[in-house]
Image (cartoon, rainbow, N blue to C red; front, side, top):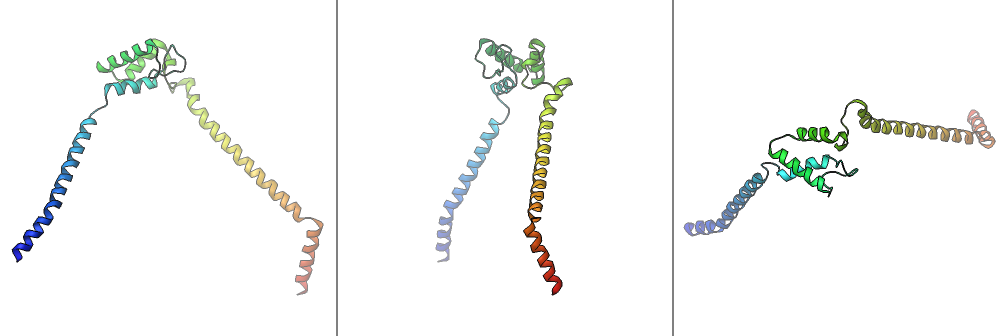
Length: 170
């Protein structure tokens, strides 16, 4: 009898074990497949990322990655060639700056007079916040004055005097 019960138990637990085994195998395969894709960025992705930060010297305010001119297509191919030769992103940027000037950069370099482009927005926000805070304080002071003036009406003084008189009598 004992032997039959253990057989039945082992037969019931077999699907659970098989399920767990299949689950762990699928998790391991998934982890392996995602690590194979995460080995490094694709060369085209790098070209797009760099092109997004450089602007077309021919078309005003158009990044290289979305510009459809023949020149921009050639510049994207040049970026790809330079990346495949092992040049860094900074070297590619420096090349474009020397060829076409600083106007090809998406953001001005943080040096010299260009610091204002980075500092002024923060200063403007800070100044605006201070003006808003001072305005709110003024509004509160005016409201307090208005409430104080309303309390000084002749009728309010009369009631205040009557209350003081009644309090002294008791």
